[in-house]
Image (cartoon, rainbow, N blue to C red):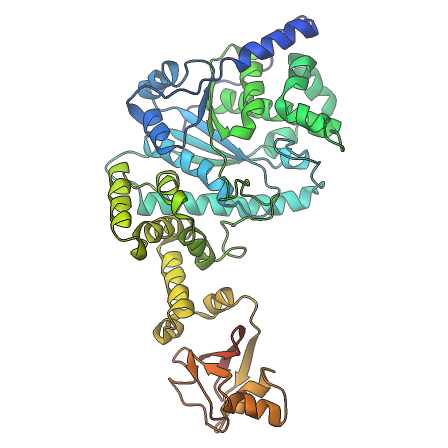
Amino acid sequence: MAVSMPRIRGCVSRHASCSLLKQTRIFLALRSKIHCSAPAPSGLLFSLHKRGILKDSFPEGAAQDQLPRLLQSAPQTVYCGFDPTADSLHVGNLLAIIGLLHFRSAGHHVLALLGGATAQIGDPSGKTSERDRLSADVVEENARGIRESIQRIFTNHELLFHDSSRPLGTVDVLNNRSWYKSWGVVDFLSETGRHFRMGTMLSRHSVQSRLKSPDGMSLTEFTYQVFQAYDFYHLNQIYGCRIQLGGTDQLGNLMSGHEFIHKVSREEVYGLTIPLVTSSAGDKLGKTAGNAVWLNRDKTSPFELYQFFLRQPDANVEGYLKLFTFLPLAEVERLMEQQREDPSKRLAHKRLAAEVTKLVHGKEGLESAKRCTNALYHSSVQALEEMSDEELQELFSEAPFHELLLEPGTTVIDACRKVGAIPDGPRGYRMISDGAVWINHKREDKPEQVLIPKLHVLSNGLTLLRVGKKNFYIIKWLSL
């Protein structure tokens, strides 16, 4: 194990129960400790604050006093959790990963925690109704996809963005299912449940908003904060983790973890929140909102990810360059000055799209995105020739893909009829004659024209056929 492992300590003293009024006062006091002002003007936390990645810290004064001293004293361990409720993370999760990458670049150890157990419970934070129950098999499959995504991004960052002269911290991807599978429900409630007060739990914003909703809140969802609090405690005991990173919607769960650890072990731990990524309309980006841009290629291609950032409104670009890239802030300012001088070149948009695509999909992914962009928007035949079958199918995801035998004498009308691009008979013939058919971005109006290699059939054996403005067909030619 890359970091020291202190001796495991179990839950200790039993505390007498307090009155509901007293616990409510404690909760309100804890809420008053959330600190929103800027950290001390030096070090990692100050840098994260300037970039907009750091929003709040907990408890009071943590970002100005205790945390900077702690981070400077020795490498620390930081964790962030990701529930595998889908088989890929999305852009809404990317900022949390980037937060971990900044800590790792500064020499700290990071833990990416997959919620193989908590995904079956469901986090009520930010939800208006209870999510559908996921089976253990589905959660396990989702966890594999997310693990691959996280590991790929950490590898790309280390290879392409990190200054090799600075030592990197370690990274571990864990799954909380590994420690919950040994717990019985009675033992877990007996050991942990007695440290949570109902008044405090009921006062959480995530709970209150759901209790007032038409669907209410199930007992399963209500216990989520207990499990997330125990996750923090477990990582604190096993890995010496003292810092939790999470979105602003996780603040209540973070507070539960802090309170639980303080009661049980008297350890001083800290929480940092990052802003939620929203669309230009102010909606949270994610699968629940139905606008997710995924980080795994089989769900969102490098081209689609590239285009998502390339098409961001001008008002978002400077902030996104600070949040989603590792460019020095001085370089971001230079880019914005160049953009203001000549907005038509969209230099800042292009740099943003390139940096994020390279982080998520590596250099090959960025090159793929640029090839697809050139092929689709710049009618580049060279880009088409350089594209793989996979890239063509990603770019024209709705287009039928056909494998055909390239027989001698095959004509334009033969190719169109074999893939069902035109109707049989005179009407199909006229469509070609009237200029409705394009092959590899060139209009083809001679139905009896024999297919010519390198013109109609590219060197990679592919033909991109278009009928009208939007009906694409991809043909992969097989030789005799």
